[in-house]
Length: 600
Image (cartoon, rainbow, N blue to C red; front, top):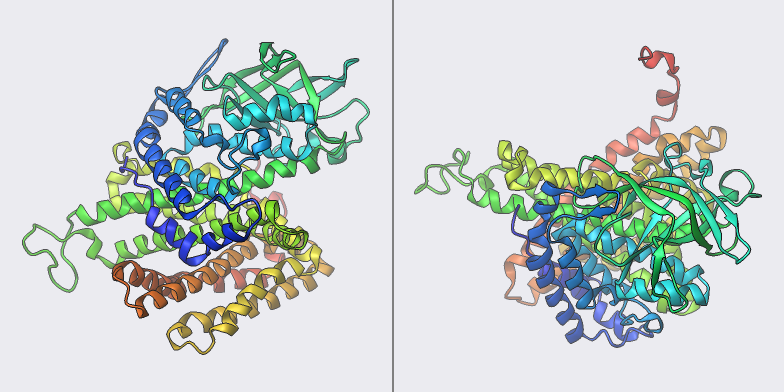
């Protein structure tokens, strides 16, 4: 595997220079303790842990995988010890409420740590990562007793959490689930059923695992309106909250899968397991979205993480690997051949990875800034941030994972045949990344959510919340000659985005299939447009630094050059997506099922 180095310089560029996190923390109630000195110390220590402790375990987890037995699941060598160190250092409690044992620091700071953990070892990071959603769900919907029993242990990291949603016949359609919950005289429930694809469903790293489980009550309505949410711990607890005995929860088997081998993806059996209702009966799906939105932003980070690894590995190899001569004459005449970084096609791949990585980081951190506001802002600020997050979450989740996977594949391609074999780690990066476009809602599901629910069902208001930001930037910088190459195409794209959305809405009024037919192309178009805005903003910051005579000339010139590459080489992809959208639904729907081919 490439030796992982936390990208602290670019992290600081996005946080401090682009998005103004120092001022953001200073003015946001409850975030004042996140001073520049404290933030820098956290970043430095977090980077050390990721580089020195969990990055060396990445290939170990891939080669060893997890082991199942009737006693439970065993994680790869070193995973348990690394988790103990993670907990002892206080990392799980970083961005949680002090009332439940947290350190009270901003959620956006926790997201930076999640990014570095994911880059160093995504499989390992899923064990503490899935606890975030469980914590947020219990914090939002749990009773005071549930918070005291479960939340405090989750925040400390002593226990971990999961989300147990789908079943073998369900997939994304959770309205079909069959797991049942029978009420008991003491107010608890007996939960019975089988859940599949449960990441971190069982392991040996923590004393207890708190499962958040969707199930049906006996009198529940059919479909999604009859789903309730339950806390079902692996181990029951006594009156003092200590582990007291095994619950009726077990891992039936481990999935054999393409990647993320170091994480236990489990078939979980609930056999009259004791559970506790969380939130109102038959409102489990509503409560679950607290969990899902957290998970979707976390999965967006996975796309960013795999792109970063592709960049680090691809760049190191391209600088060292000697192959052929430059088309314009030898660049390293003292060597047998030139480094492959001199070749245009290798540069195309490296620049594509760089553009997606650094642009994706800007989008992810911007979203994280909105999360801070939803927790700490005024009522009006919270509403605006919620609306922005609702719009950006499906874009961040789907677009960053799609482009992260593209970046990971470029990482293999840069290595040529060496990328295909395991010793370099680039093929693992591709395999680990592939799941990101599937779990927490596939790209197609995110696209329907974006276009159908977030944009068309709000009559375009969700879209306008972001396009107004873009319009304001373009208007403010319209006279800046050095930014003209970015501002003019961005302004035109922003206008086209709104017009295209209106056309989709009009055609959908006569044929609802138009929404499904347009949705994925619409999401990808939106993702390219969103990244164009952030690259224009980054170009502005870089140009100002260069004009001021910075000593980091290479860093800021690279920002400008990558912005130029993005606008000239990547952004034109929107033309294809627009043409596909405007071609309509008929070319997808006119073929009969039989015409696709003979039944097997």
